[in-house]
Length: 272
Image 1 (tube, rainbow, N blue to C red):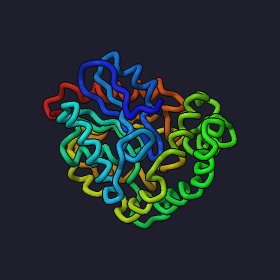
Image 2: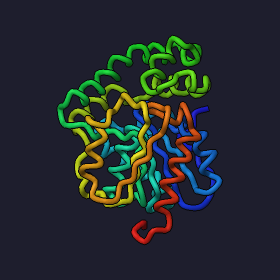
Image 3: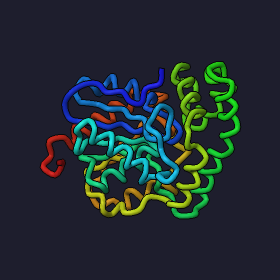
Image 4: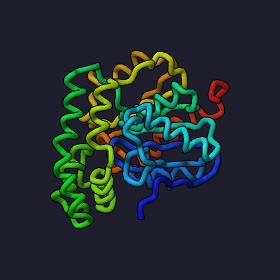
C-alpha cells in the first residue's frame, strides 16, 4: 500500500522531507525514534511516489513548496521545524524563506551549486542516465524492485556502504524512483530555475548535517555556499560513515543529529 505521509508522536512539530525521486519511506526509522518526543510528519513531496499530483505548470522548487504549504495548512501547522535531505533540504530553505520554518536541518542539502556549473549538469545527467533502468523497473514491477540488478546502482549512488541498507528499504527506494511521475520534466525545471537564491534572507536557526562520505554533493562545490551566505546562526554536524542519504545506512545516527539540532533550537526566543 502506498501512502503519502507518516505522522506519529506529539510535541514540537517536525517535518521530514526526502530527496529527489524518493518518498517519505526513507525516514520511517527516524520517525519511530523522534516521535517519542516530537510530533513528526514524514511527507512525500508532490510529484513523487504516492504524493500529491504536481501539475506541469508547477514543476520546480516553488511548486513543490506550494504543495507542501497546502499540506501544512490542512493539518494546522503554521510553522514547524523542517529537516530535509538533498532536494528536501533545498525545499526546506524555500519554506524558511516563506516564514514556515521554525528551524532548518539540511541533511546534505541540494541547491548549493553554482549556476550552469559542472556540478549542476553532472547531477542532472546522473539522473537522466539512471532513468531507462528505472523505467524498465516500473514495467517489470515488484520483481525488479526487489532485485539486486535494479537496486545496486541506485543504492550505490547514494550510500557509502550498500550492505548497510536494509533490503526492504532498498526495494522501496526502487519502487519510489521508478514511480516518480515528474522524473524527467522536473529536471528541466530545475535547470531553468537554477540553484537556491536568497539564502542571505534566511535567518531561521539552521544546522547543516553532512554525511562524512557524501560524494554526491561535495562540500567545496555545493555545501560551502550555505555556510558563506546564510545570515543566521549555522551549526554543523558530521555524520560518520555514511553517504548522501544517510537514513538508509544508519537512521540512528541521523536521529541523534536531528535531536542535537532540535535540542539546540527548541524553546529559543527567536524560534517562532
